[in-house]
Length: 266
Image 1 (cartoon, rainbow, N blue to C red):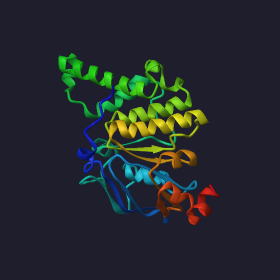
Image 2 (cartoon, rainbow, N blue to C red):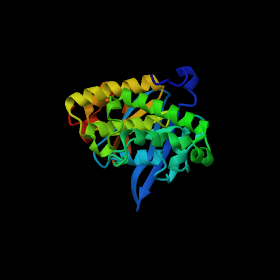
Image 3 (tube, rainbow, N blue to C red):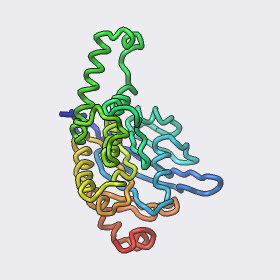
Image 4 (cartoon, rainbow, N blue to C red):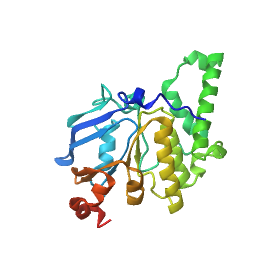
């Protein structure tokens, strides 16, 4: 069984993720304007809005794909602004993508093991000579990877190429690969896209279990309102780069601005 990191009290300070007035414009067009987010440790929040609202742009700002024009981001006491994507990942932030980005010709297991190699504790010489330290570390990583694959129901596909998985299983593999980086915060970009109704129910349970088992905060972008309203504790709503509402699922469902901009009476 995969071991969860320390208790909630121990993780609360370092796992607290905050965004303060972050903004970015492309060619004079304001894509995201003064976006704020307070994501406590081990929380499960949603980010919703119509197509083109700026949701994925927010994820790209968070993970270092884009450099914000203004604002700050902090994970605990660490200011993430200006860090490169791999540095942000090392700091404890991981994401999946709206368009799946797996190594299609590698096996399922190899896709997961790549995430562990971000923190290699042995030297090139260890790897070349296959020293006891190298062998021990690689064995430990494989065991951890298999535990994660078992959690997501993919252990029996360990030797299959990623491209041979169904769309739903490729999405699960992306989540496994994110978890393998040992994140404090996990960002899921439309994890239910392409899934059928039964798979979406299973995904809801899986996301909640991941939060509890790994003491990780989760922020998800999702268009499936049943999923968002069913598992998120708090939701931010974007429209044309502006935050138009923040609140509980019940508050969001009854907010007139949200209904007008997006939900259409949901």
